[in-house]
Image (cartoon, rainbow, N blue to C red):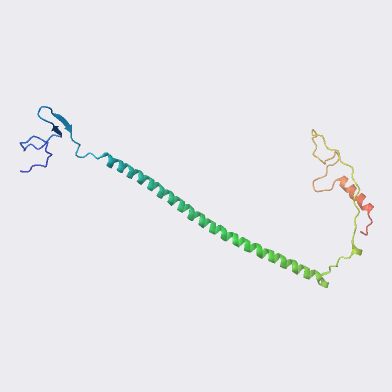
Amino acid sequence: MYQPNLPPQLDRSSSKPAPSRLKVVGSNHQQQVKHLPEPNAVPVWLRSLLTMQHGALIVFASVLGLSAIVYGYTVYTQSLWRSQYGQLQRLQLQESQQAMMNEHLKQQMAQTAEEPKSGLIAPNPDRMVFIPIAPQRPAKPLPTPHSSQPVGVGVGDSLPLGTASRREASLKENRSSQFPRGY
């Protein structure tokens, strides 16, 4: 016949009473009852060590995660710096090539200008043109802030944009009459 393995308190086949968790200490006249520790109870020092282990595991996981983030950021910034530095070197090379090409073109233009068939004449003080300074013009009165006309537009000025005003045309005539046509 099959009997399951039952704890001693539930074992009915035994004639002995179930062992008690209480221990009687002392003599016959004075009996004191002392509680025994539970068989599955974990000591306090072991509990504190387990708590410290859990805390250390959390700290370790945090440090590991942060170090992975810092490592990833470092690798990313180095690759970004490498690509930007390569672009800087290419731009510096292009700049030096353009400066060299510019100087070559200047030299070529100077050589072309020195050739007799270019039609250019060397500067000579006898051929210099001196233009006298224009006479001082009277200052224009400033428009009042409440004026509805824009600045520089007179009452008789109704010419379209891009054409010379009457005042500018008369100034050109005055200037041309002051200077002979040979200059």
